[in-house]
Length: 594
Ligand code: GDP
Ligand code: MG
Image (cartoon, rainbow, N blue to C red; front, side, top):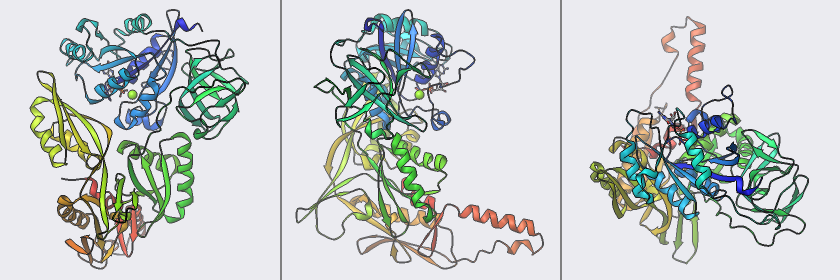
């Protein structure tokens, strides 16, 4: 295709503002998907995406429109997947910034806009959901125009649901987004912006060609690893993969298959060139996403450890952001310490392990990564609280911090500041987006955000606040390890790293919560919270003899069996810790603060 006829753009927005629905309409209106095969969120191909109604992976689709070729990329909106967005942006010249006309600008609207501006993209401001009775297109057009510095009349208004305004939007894309520019005669250079493992086809690599041309049966070179492969298949997605015999030229977006089996051999951000007379200089890539949150994952049934390892290996083929290493816990046995991009990523990985691989897992409370400097100058990176050194030999502890942005109606300023201050936040600044909406910026420790922060924020603002955060280095902090002891034995999986001022309250809360969560056993179970050798809280679970069959008067056998089965079912999520049966909830009890 002549590059002058190509337009590459993505749709960016806060979660739920309607990206995937707008993408659906575009697929339909351009005739790529006929009405019969249409289903909602067409591009959300993973089961878990469809069920939760969220996009996790970006998707690229080629759409014919008015003699042009549009390559559209639908992106995820959640903060955990910002890196997915930023790499999609680099495959584009323009972005549709979508804003819900009943909600207005939210935290990820801003975050994504800044990413797009940094990538030098042409931005088309669009208000969506104008069919909603609660829509206030005039008010929010002004807000949006103020934000990006255009006239309110330049803000397009559409409904992804009814299709109103979508044709005009597509025309606008053709008219205003610049065509890609590249050197057709130069050696091929293509940027890998996604890489996905497919059981049948191996790794499918998504590329945006910048210079030159990539063809079928060509030997290609991955510039960062120097690995060479042969392109077995090359094509475009529209909306299913379509082989392209002509290959891909300047400005085109498509996929290639080389038969490799591991996404790490086709690294996102790498540059693909020809193996013979290839390019010398790589394209600017991306930083590899860094895990921010760690948690222990253990099979409930210790025999399933090899299955868990295999499942993690398989999942990683498709999720380069997932990292893990084996770990042993005195309480939980053999398992893995797994690194995630954030809490949603953690939930999704866990759910996929259980659903797609049939595993039953115990996960421990998530924690961030600490850097500990000992008095003798040694430095430790602590990804597991139980490895936090005890004793007086610690010189300094550093914790990761974030720059957090909260958007909310101004009536909630007080409540928001109270929450942030309670979590060791430092106010950075505050701006009014309009008369009654405010943007508040804080430096907040990441470790404070992962404990229930978002839920609290939502409940204290009646759901109106939205949050975005980005890593902002580290800070020194006065942190201690709080251990939890059952029957006098510290349970490593319960250890947590807490700020010194909060350690006492944390210990008391945890002991109380565990007393409620751990069922009575046939013996007494004392629960203690301790810092080092100093016990700071204590609770007791009294003994009980639970005989479920006592009620059955010996008569009805089938009823008896049912009861026993029910009891077994209830035990499925229990783990023996020493002699004590502990339910899964207990391991993440620290997560909920009330
Ligand atoms: P995404 O998270 O940005 O991809 O948002 P989705 O496309 O998944 O949409 C979120 C919710 O908003 C879904 O329930 C959609 O049905 C709804 N929605 C999206 N666009 C419109 C619209 O134009 N009008 C109305 N009324 N609802 C919409
Ligand atoms: Mg979506």
